[in-house]
Length: 493
Image 1 (spheres, rainbow, N blue to C red):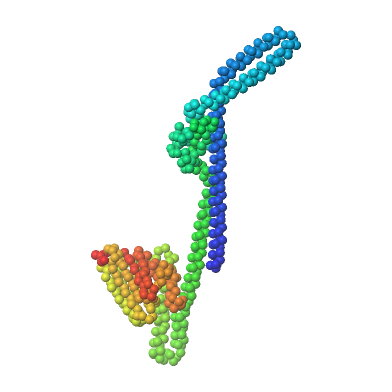
Image 2 (cartoon, helix red, strand yellow):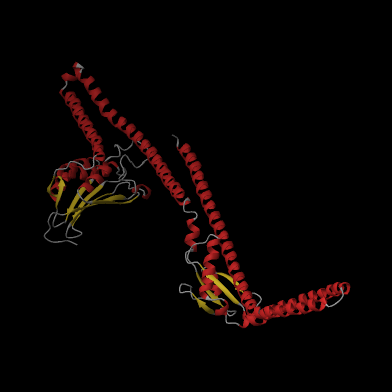
């Protein structure tokens, strides 16, 4: 799949996921807002019901208080009507009927006026005397709590609540234990307190307010959209999986490109010695060549050298198998690093001098016994030295230096530095990746498969050590290998 195709699919899928998450978030926000509005409306309706009930009870209280006067007046009216009825019997039948009708009309009118006066008197009494009663009598705390509970339950609100009565100065008259102590404005802003004026007909300087607070309101509102949360979690998981798949796709594409480069390099590397051996074989088939000792010696040397080269290339490729094993099969033994490094330098000295270079050692560590696989340890040092030769500066003499020290009482540090072409900073982070090769302008101008440093990193890690690299482009590169010591007598700073 082309990289452009992957990018197009990534952008489309990212837009789809972003739109899906946005829609879910928008839907959840709308649901929360609608639920909150509905809750507010139900609470205010309940508070109005409580206020109305308290007013009705107060009216009933004053009506009962004045009921005695109303009943006494009614009895007096009945006695008067009875006297009128007795007097009418003494009149003539015609006069009696006419007089009775007039008397009944007058009596009914007087009775209506009197009852109206009584009712007006009761209303005036309520308006004038009600506000003078203590608020604790007019709105008893137990009664208010029962009314609130019933009204809220009738409007579908069953969560716990706390309430308080405050005067016009917002001072608390009484409250429940869970009601927060703060100013009304502060409570409304931070806790969502709902307020309703009780007895609105009272004078402004004597008005009382009922305040209700719901401690679990937020949880109650959010619980209405809890079924959306699993879908959002699933969407986020799908998004993470998609991101992982995209990253894996790019890595796989990069790996395929590296492997293609590896195959191209491997083909080129193997083709050269094979061609040389084939040409040497053809020369051996010529009788004239076989009669010449010098020619035979030259051809035989070519075959031997190219055979060694083929063997080295094959061994390098086989090193790749280490990456597909959870743990490499190592033969760990106690090795004196100084002895091993000296032997490697003596062997490598001729190769360095062949290119006009020099190699020097400065083995200062007072203890250098480490537990490693000697063969792989030798390959690690050899690979680093071989890379220094490969990436040397053609116009300047090559200088290689190997030194050791004990940075701590339990560590051995091996430093290998060169004066080669160096490595740019952008390549350092990928230097130990398998198949990775620093581009020097020509893919085949430096021999190798990009496995050497990856193999070095793998082996050093297996030895429970660390490897770091420092490089300055155009000046050279330095590798530091730190390994744990088996034993040490003293420490060198």
